Image 1: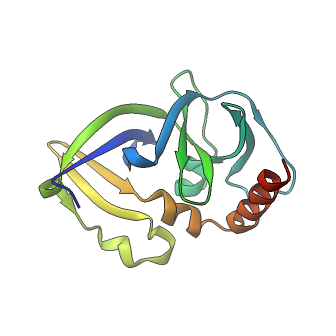
Image 2 (image 1 turned 120 degrees about the horizontal axis):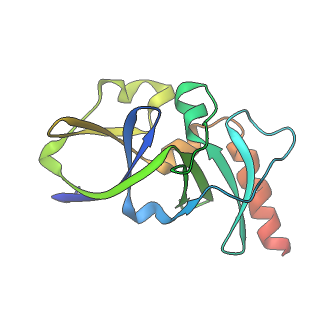
Length: 158
């Protein structure tokens, strides 16, 4: 890990989370999500972003088992992992922040299978910011493998 970790900080519920900048393609207003039948509860549908169709997941549903209440501050953070681009719906995208490695601690929950995508907690003055690994997040979500396979098949036939 480098001495400085550049991340995008966002809010879900009342808590702050962060994703490393290399995974973030863009931050967009929440719009143009087409609901699809038979998707997992946390998936809002498919969004068209820069000409590409990508799955949109409700991060509040994943973390807190409740639906995100969209406001003017709500955003879609567009992420890219090796296998899949997807949008994460959050209450608010707050800032880009440099987190010194010395401020990062390993969470006790890292061994818990349902939260293995939490890679650290940054202690920044009066703030605690939980870091998330998007690759591990995608791998931990039920039904994503089928969605990845479907999206990959669509790209090869297009």
